Image 1 (tube, one colour):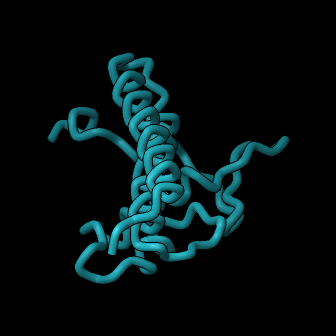
Image 2: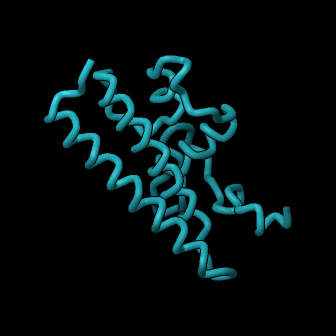
Image 3: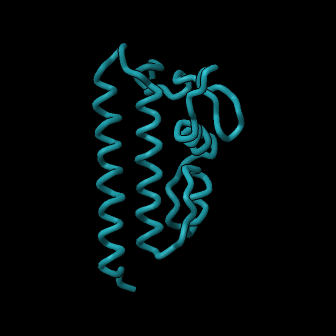
Length: 127
């Protein structure tokens, strides 16, 4: 079934924003030792989320306002779901749901503080 023109416009917007998030993450990585890994992880999460949302729009699947990668991914037909371990889905989701408080960063989902160090590039891990 063809995708309506209005939906195509929305899909293009999601993809353009996702591409900008990817560019931002990639550029931020070039900062080397001064790279704020939490910023890279946030933009990586946003890129994944927006690509999933673009796919959901293309399939005319209604989705909630959510940053939860697992929940959004679960709305897709199984054959179209991006391959991603649950642990990675949850880790990425945390970067979209962290807010700053007077006491530091805390997760909106579970109240636990998160460090930027748990989302490292393979070069940072030495792999």
